[in-house]
Image (cartoon, rainbow, N blue to C red):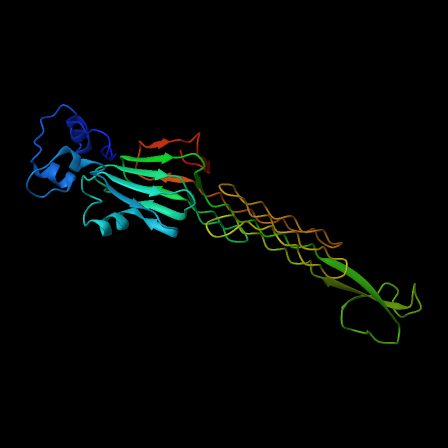
Length: 302
């Protein structure tokens, strides 16, 4: 944290802590560490030179579809990600971020001061999985969630509706002395003076196609409901309605089963997409999240 601002007083203990030392360590005000912190390269140095100064490398997020924190910090100060420098990444209220990645091999510490929204990508239509919002691959990272902040895995896409069952219908053609053709023929009475003196022709029809599932909620997109299936042929079943896309951090709905025809039953709809995780800790056994009761997390994170 920064040293006190003008109008306050600064103690040697506070300077030590800001430099990463214990508060009781001996300190030389003319040392290079203190001069770097106070931004006084030479000459006289006074405690008032330290007002508001911080040893942290601090960055503020701008809305973006993704952010690789190693890239951002190394661009700001070469080698700082692996170095021992204390780091802070601030996401202000009203700022919406897409996927954030904190890669492995970070040195020092990192505080993610989060007051905005972090959102994974939503699943695509017809069962696409939602994406993880944050991936943490280094230790010594603290996520500090302020009131009203959110971390949200992408919602799963809805599954496609099932195909409708097949139909069958019969058409009758008066006898004319020959098979009329054009369909699968079964002669009940035939043309020999029997039951009906007609050709009874049976034709098969296809069931309707299942409707598309809706997309899941995610960065830059709202969830969508599934669409209706198409109608089938004569005596065939309509396709099932596609499953609805899910809200943040939830799985998409399964598509509805297609309606039965008079020849075959409709098929089951496909499963909805999996929910995206809010946070994935990869290779990190210990982590710190502060403020989960103040902010809101949609999706798994433990």
